[in-house]
Length: 90
Image 1 (spheres, helix red, strand yellow):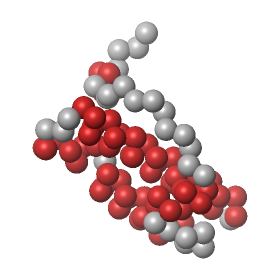
Image 2 (image 1 turned 90 degrees about the vertical axis):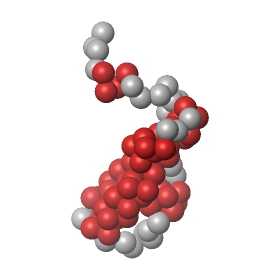
Image 3 (image 1 turned 30 degrees about the vertical axis):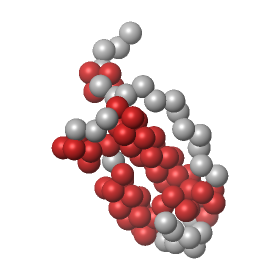
Image 4 (image 1 turned 60 degrees about the horizontal axis):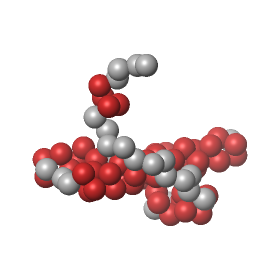
């Protein structure tokens, strides 16, 4: 068993389902024809807004922290899905 302290500090969350492609574009706030560079910028904007570390100074409840982790996970999954589609098109 590995003792990764960074991992152990994360709240116990159930894995959010992968977003559908339409939902992935919607989560990032981009359209299907958005350039890969703009998709990356949109991902960074969303993560800056929703990352759980943004709540740290607000002393969040465990539930608020869990929701923030889930939202960040959804955004990461959406970005990966859109990025794979863009790579397949190239």
